[in-house]
Length: 234
Image (cartoon, rainbow, N blue to C red; front, side):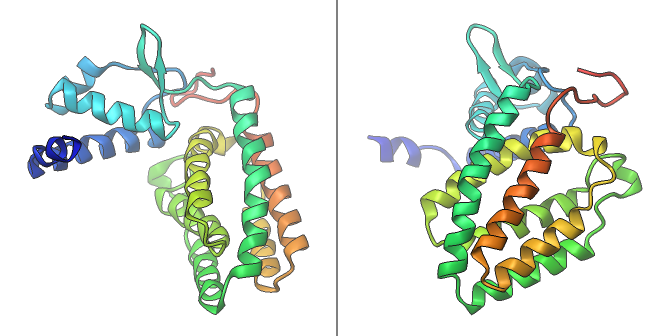
């Protein structure tokens, strides 16, 4: 029965659903919505010119990624900025990612080393800020940053753990984008360089320590108040 139900969904509807989900996800990640802003299905359906059912499907997907909350009897909303919420995400990352990095250093082959080097080179050569995107990290840099960190740990070869990494990354990336402008003096390039060097030297202790310190600085930047687009604070 489940297979028949899935088969009954037309390719056109599937494509439209994917497009709506992508637009909504990108809008949240881009900061079009401030922390705590409501995501009203009726308004989104009208704005995007699609059915309410397709919008609700997209909202359920972004909730699953940690980019929105489903509120009892109140619909959907962008996660409210909360020190505790982001500290818990940061704690989970500091617990899991150094372990994955150690596993990658132990299990990763020459191809993994090559991918790490290439990902770091791409990150170094990508501008973190561009005038047209204002005070927030550029889209290109944010993607290069994700790829570098993902490549570091994917040598572990454990799909389930990597899925956990992906979800935690997405949730913390939202908060990091909100607060990116609050720590302009941070030397990301030096931190990433130490990570790459330790990983490629197969120094698991040094790599894990560098990653833990890197994540701790990120967590420190995500606490307290964050500035909304337009200059207000939440």
